[in-house]
Length: 264
Image (cartoon, rainbow, N blue to C red):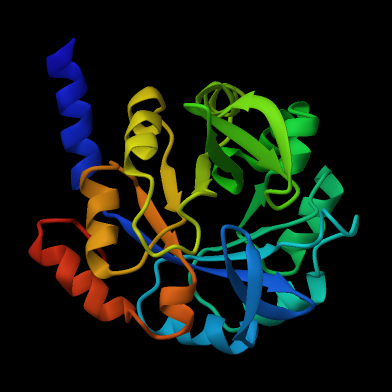
């Protein structure tokens, strides 16, 4: 059994790892905070998307972070403007709660959608979206905070704790057909102290679908650690890219020197 697990880990390590900038959108602007609060402006999302597409990002994630809290739909017109500037896979999330919501976003240029609070409130939504659009289109985002020795899932941009455990929920998400999980550690988010690699490694071990690491990137080694120690399939970051603290071509070159497969 250990031999089989080792083979799986080796195969996952050899798969090309993805670098994904994230556009957190509020009031039509890209923002970034720490631990999901204290947001500051990070620029125009359309311009940032164009730059990332031209400078080596593997994918792009657009999250309308206030859509659920404000009980409205994702900004489809802004999605269309961003999509017109990119030629890489484009994932959109925020306020999605139905097949029709996804239809609108796909028609406006999204390649995949990310659901979070709506999936926890009504898990059948995952099955419905997978049946209509396929697993490859459905990403489930999970925001979790480490409380009393347990990773607790939170909703509505991290504002509402649930009784769900990260790993139990992740296994259910996979069983319902989701194609990927985007795991954000609320404790690490914006701290620049590195990703939650122990939790990432457990997710990677217990699940077979790709795991995207989010929350905590502060330097290039943190990405390497997420891929090696956390066994993540992709790493997502925001401020280090938005404020030009890390340039994607340089990051990929550094990862390659550590034997991590990346698209150069």
